[in-house]
Image (cartoon, rainbow, N blue to C red):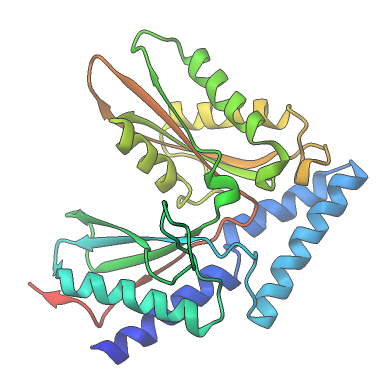
Length: 281
């Protein structure tokens, strides 16, 4: 099992770190062609050139190789053991080491020598799907550090929520390497809203939200954010964000959590259906 799992996990880690997602590239190219500000257009050309070199030469897209977030989705016809989850985490750590990616974790208190241990794993069971899918999401902390959570009074209007989201992106500014993709989680509990915001970044950013209300909200927020004029790498222009993606969940009648998780222009993730670690039901 170990060798076959290695053959599946290592390419997944390489793809996530060396190849920018096609949907993100599509929006970056679109932004480049519509941008009129010369400095902003030049910054976008650098971003696109960097992504091209990284893919061709098997190099990390960014020096911040991120803290790997692992999402495991288990379908109704499959099962997965704790041992298999641990093996996936181990193989991801080994793949980071083998491909000369920067060690990603330190003790939050001692903050001594970085290591390849400490990836964060989420396991979800989806009765509407079959098979088992693993997503590797290297999350850089220039943007992760700009995460925001606000526990709104449930009586607030939508405009207050929109203002909070736009102001949070404004505060992130050039430090988080725009153009951004802005993930928003609304509902659940405080921790669940933050997880929803991160999961929103895994959605196709070049497709409209299937929920009409959320689609309208995403478009409205994107327009407001791009009107801020921060622009690529803070150089001004039309594109402060490539997309806004929103995920929601039911919440308590007395609460309204809203969370924001921003990604820099290097929104990296890769997904694969695994075969070697699955136990058939």
